[in-house]
Structures are given as C-alpha cells and as structure tokens.
Amino acid sequence: MSETESRNFIEQIIGKDLAEGVYDTVHTRFPPEPNGYLHIGHAKSILLNYGLAQKYGGKFNVRFDDTNPTKEKEEFVESIKADVAWLGADWEDRLFFASGYFEEMYEGAVKLIKKGKAYVSDLSADEIREYRGTLTEAGKEDPSAGRSVEENLKLFEEMKEGKYADGEKVLRARIDMASPNINMRDPVIYRVAHIPHHNTGDKWCIYPMYDFAHPIEDAIEGITHSICTLEFEDHRPLYDWVVRELEYPHPPKQIEFAKMYLTNVVTGKRYIKKLVEEGIVDGWDDPRLVSIAALRRRGFTPESIRMFVELCGVSKANSSADYAMLEYCIREDLKLKRPRMMAVLDPVKLIIDNYPEGESEMLEAPNNLENEALGKRKIPFGRELYIEREDFMEEPPRKYFRMFPGNEVRLMNAYFVTCTGCVKDENGVITEVHCTYDPASKGGNSPDGRKVKGTIHWVPAKEAVKATVRLYENIIDEESGVYNEDGSLNLNPNSLTVREAYLEPELADAKAYESFQFVRNGFFCVDYKDSEEGEPVFNRIVSLKSSFVLPKKED
Image 1 (cartoon, rainbow, N blue to C red):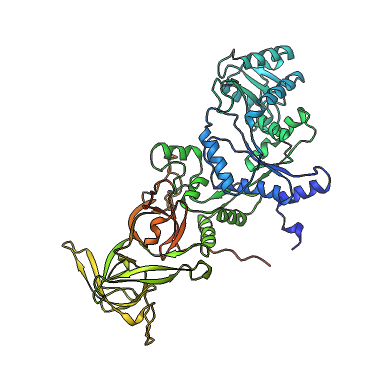
Image 2 (tube, rainbow, N blue to C red):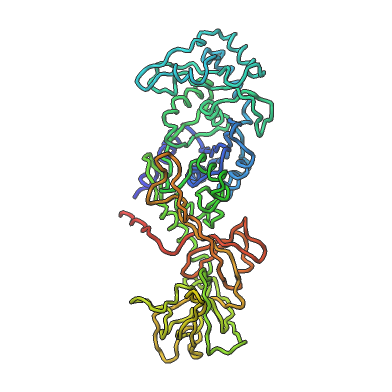
C-alpha cells in the first residue's frame, strides 16, 4: 500500500495544497463552544486537528468560540482545557478566544456595510424566517434592504451603543434571497443581546453570529485548513463569502468530515443538562456518560481514546461505532499495564476449619501473569477469608467447578481446599462456607500431581479493606432504543449498582485515577470525587468479557 493510498481524504487534500503551494504550512484548530462539557465525539476532532498539525510540522490552536454569552460559563472553559490537555493535544501558548476578536469582527461588519454588503433589519426573528422562504421557494427581500450605507452605519453604531432592545434590530449580510442555499439568503451576522460576557463583561451588547465569527477567527489566526463536521458543509459557501468579502490575503479552506456516533449513548447537551439538573446523574462527569470528563473519571485512558478514534477512521460518510469497540480499546490498553488484584464484590465468609486458629502467613502473588515487569506482591492469608457468593453452591449444575460440598478447588496463589458444607441463617441465607485445606499444596499446586478444575479468588477476612464499588450499565435501555415516543430519554433503571466489597489490604492506599484489574470482575478505577484517604471508591471501567471482535485487516 503506497503512502498516498494510506492517507485519509483530508490528508490527501492537505498534501495537494502543500505540493501546489496553496499553503506553505499547516495550521489547524479545535474551536469548542464553552456551553457544556466535551464528549467522545469531540475527542475525534481534537485528535484529528492536533494530529494533522503534528504530522505536517505545523501549528495547533485551541480557540473558544464564545460568541453566545447566554449559554457560556467559565466552568465549561476550564473543563474543556482539562479535557484537551488530558488527551495529549498540546496547544503550548496557542490558546485563544473568539471574544478577543470582537473589535475586528465589528470592524469587519462595518466594512461590509460600507461595501453595500450588509444592512440593519427591523424584522423579528419569526419574520426573518418567514421572509427566508423554503427549500422550494425563494425568499423575499427584507423591507430594510434598501437603506443607505450612511443610515446602516448610524443604526449599527446605535446597536453597539445599546439604544435598542434585544431582538429589535439585527445586522444582515446582503447576498442572495433567491439562492438555492438557504444559508446564503441574507443571513443574520449580528444581534442585540444585553447580556454580560464571561470574558468581556458589559463592554458589548451586540454579538456576532457563529457563521460570521468563525471564518474571521480562522483568518485572523492564520488557520490553513478549517476542519469541521458534515453539518457545516452547507455553510461553506457563507464561510467562503465572509473571508472573500473581507479580503483576507490567505483565506482558510473549510473541509468537512463525518461525526463519530456511538451507539446507545447520550451526547446531546440539553439531554445531559436535564439529567444533571434532575439529579439522575452525578454531574457532567458521571461515569455513565461519555463526556470526556466522565470517561476520565470512570478510568478510561487517553491511549484508549486515541486507539478508538484511529479504529473509527476519518471519512465523509456518517456511521456509528459500537460502544463495545470503545470497551475493547480500554481492555487492550490496560491488560498489560495494570496489576491484577483480588476483590470480592458479593462476599460470603469462607472458614478453613483445619487451619491453625490465630495464625497467618504472607503468600506471594504475581501482579500480572502476562507482564512479569510488574513484579510480585505479598498477601496475608489466614483461617478466615471472603469469597464471592457465586463461587459456592449447595446443589450445583453440571460443569460447575467451583465450591460445593465434597469438591476440591484451588484458592488462587494459596492452597487446595475441599468444601465440607455451609451455615445458613434463619432465612436460609448462607452466612459461612466451610472447608479444609491441604498444607502441602502451598502456592496452588499439589505435590502428588492431582488436578483441580476450579480456581477461585479470595481476600483475607481480618486484613481486607472494605470499599464501595460501583458497577455500571449503559444509562440507556439498549433493548428499547435511546428515546421514548414523547422524545424523553429511555433510561435504564439498572445503570448503577453499588456494592460494599472486600479488597486486598494493599488497595487501601490507592489514589484517585489509579486503576487495577480485579480478578474475574473487570478493570476498576479509584473515583476522584468520592474517595477519601484510606477509603477508596472504585468505579468499574469495563468488565473482562468482550462482545467486540477487531475486524481483520485486508491484505
């Protein structure tokens, strides 16, 4: 496969532009609006734009498109900066705000008025929609379109000075009310909004519209390739019109690619906002969400997100990725990196009747059988342990190889034990399982060569750490789809299960964001928000079972 064939379509466009001298460098940007937390789809845009700048030895900007103060907060600015940095997209000193260009945008609007390319309109928002026409009918000219340049300049200055109420007047670009592209039918480029801005305070009471501001921001910063998602394809003629009419010497080129959709997840900001406000989730970073902050809190790694984005690829065609593929990526990333510890999530006490009372010993266990470099650890072992409740059955089905009366199993890294029975309370609930051990089988191997089919994990009852463990399912009921008939979210009532578990004593000092594999139970991460010193709370990142199979690469 040649280098040209292996490039995605964006890289082919950039390569052609560089070869033909359209641009002599590559300068990209990630331009989020600070009106919510970023989600997994934004990660694709961040990594794509940053990766292109890195590949071609160019520059990468992070720029906040903060032109709508009605929805923007400093909280969102800080969360976005943290997300971009966590993903490894280094903007160095190239952090910008659209609000930093408000003066240039105002001057650009004045320039359009002087060129006869913009006018102040008295129509309301509803009237503008009505006058715009439909996909099959041309629009009607705005009654204000005939105003003189002098009158428009005066009215626009008065808008800036605060003489008009919100919605009373707008500035429209004069393009073509008969254009087949509705975006070109004299779009609004400035509106009155008496709202303080998080960056500029009360300095402005008029704000530029996104379609007008964005190309100006790109042009001012020297962006060469403005990479955006497919919904902006119909806006590209307006983007090009703005940079052309404002006569920027090196206009940027807009290129659209397909968004990354993930099956059965919630990414819409208004839906997440509702979940947060109604207390259904624990903030924008609730581990059941797929905001970047939520994935980080749950225990996903930047490497796993990068792997996922690479597997999804870059194309012009919309498609959906299965959530199982994201889970595959985190399993692949963690399986050789993290220690495999023992934790019992649904405990029942196991008593070894022939083990000396009051005695204990330290047993050695490998931290990761597939990666010897992670070393070994010591685990206390004694007469009383905790095992998983599901690892004992009085009357087991066929091919059940764990504990039942008369059966011998291996305690992981410890001894062979033979189950002798159990103790129940007055309600018939098993409270203790009893067994005997073979002292000669230390380390989990019998000197006489006998084999056992079952191996179970355990933790020492006396030294075990009690911890809260949270198990997650998709917040959406996958069987019924994302939305109900009324448009509300179809929530899964079992999306969160909280367990009081027993863990190896070494896990007592686990720090926020540290992750581990709990034998048979999955990968878990220490929650940064709810953990306290010596009392960690663990979020399950992902189970060990995978339904995703990585497609084979074609030769």
